[in-house]
Amino acid sequence: MEELASLSSKELRQELGKAEEKYHQLIERRDELNQKAKLIREERNMLNEEKKKLIEEMQKIKAMRNEIVKKMREHKKLRNEYQQDARQLIAKKRDQKKKFKDNSFLKAEELKIEIRRLEYEQETVPMPPKEEEKLIKEIKEKKMEYEKVKKEAEKQKKVEIDLENLDEAINKLFEMADKEHEMVVKYYKESQEYHNKFLSLVEEITKLINEANEKHKQYLEIKSKADEYHKKAVEMRSKLMAIKKERKSRYEKAMKMLEEFNIKAKKMKNSHELEEFVDKNLEKLKKEGKISIGL
Image (cartoon, rainbow, N blue to C red; front, top):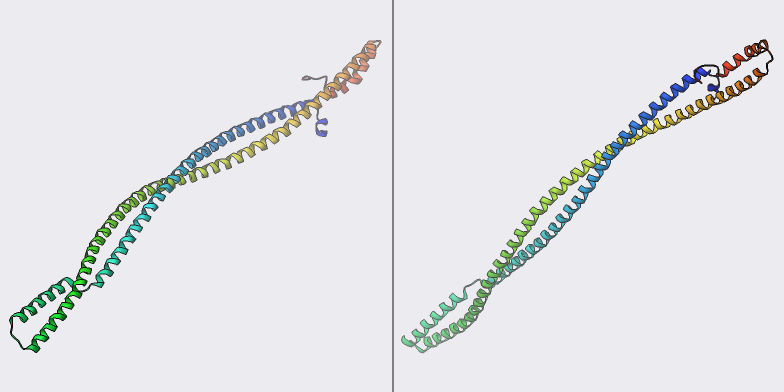
């Protein structure tokens, strides 16, 4: 460096001292920042590790919740099917009842009594032939109507038996639907518990992610500062090496001059000649920096 060549030996020593002190300060500050960055990086890694564990736990909770929801849906499907079957039977019962609005049993009994009364009248009450013929015709018509109503009554009896079976089937279906509904409610409550745990873990994980991101940001900022100090330290080291190189060069040059001086001095024949030689070369040696304290 040209600026170093222009410095005296004393100034060069002073510059060396300052450079060494500055270099050590930069190294110390760099190491402090690197240590701080290391600690923050470790904290960030710990947060990420904790986040990883919570994510694994969250996945397990989610899987369990989904399994419970699946079971709940299966029971819900069965409940709805039982209820639908029961509604269909209720509709069937309603349709069958519509077919028999009148009470065929009561009507058949009424006709039976009426026929007996007419037959009794025919057998016991004297009447003209025409009236008797009319009565016989009426009895015959009533009997025909009775047979028709009797058949309806038998059908209605079968329907009533079928309706009783329908009522039993409907009740059974609703009982089964109620049991399935109980299971739906049970699994719904369990799924909500797992869902709440899942949401709680999501909240914790989000918090950890934010904290880890903040730590990573701090790490990068401090590491960047440490790198800046490292760069300055490298530059200062280059300056140190340059100063030392300059001093070494001067030392070697001075030593060579001193050696030449001693050789020439030994060749002097008398003291007067030696004194003249010394006076002539003393300032030159001083300028090179050899004849001074410190080298």
